[in-house]
Amino acid sequence: MTLPANLSMGAVTLRVQNLDLMISYYRDAVGLDLISEVAGSAILGRGTTPALILEHSPALKYASENQAGLFHTAFLFDTRERLAWAVASVAAKYPGSFTGSADHLVSEAFYFDDPENNGVELYWDRARSEWSWKHGVIEMGTFGLDPNAFLAENLPKQVDETASNIGHVHLSVGSIEQAQDFYVNKLGFDVTLNYGGSALFVSAGGYHHHMAMNIWRSRGAGLRQPTLGLRDVSILLPDTDALGAVEERLKATTVQIRHDGQTIHLDDPWGNQVSLRAN
Image 1 (tube, rainbow, N blue to C red):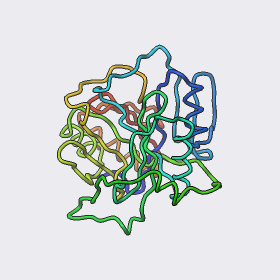
Image 2 (cartoon, rainbow, N blue to C red; image 1 turned 60 degrees about the vertical axis):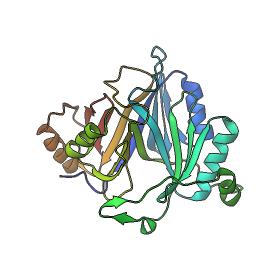
Image 3 (cartoon, one colour; image 1 turned 30 degrees about the horizontal axis):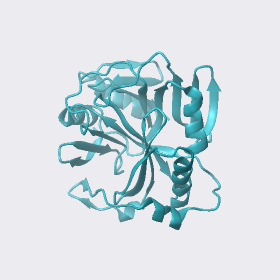
């Protein structure tokens, strides 16, 4: 019993200290559209499709580095040119926030920290026909990708659209074994790669990964305390039948679910909230 092949990632919700600064970062630098803003929150995305929800939570403190939570939110761009525009935009407007880049074989990725130290990945996928699978395991790696050379080759003079969607979400967790039990055995993702027992990549429908979990700085982490940072990871299922099937499967496990009539909410073993709803 696995999740539907045609699911997609919905909006990531972050609790933030400085709402105006964070709106400016994701709108003016990353290039998301500001869909709506009301007192205490903002929704950004692509057109009318939310990709990021920011909740003003100034009373909360920042999470410690070794706590479970968000490793990065990954924004997927349609073309290398749009990716190059976003990379150049963030690098120019927030100098010092670049943390690395890599050719992962399936994708090309650039990494930043937003103004409140949430990890951000900006990436572009190679065609699926270029991906390599061996015995059900995706071939991914971390190879050098020169950002200046990438920009020199791909940066356009202008782009027709700057917004992007959520491609995947990468979490920090306390245990890979527990992560696999929750996200695969219970929730229903497929494993695409177990990276040396320190990171797990999972997906539906043969994507390289919709979610990932690692223990690189959070090994042994326990239940999260309320902090700034990750509030919710949303997964969009194709229809209500698919949502109902997931609910029935979860009811047969030890996972506690909260269903408000439209959305199923559940917490992973570290208190990272995952929400599922019909698209």
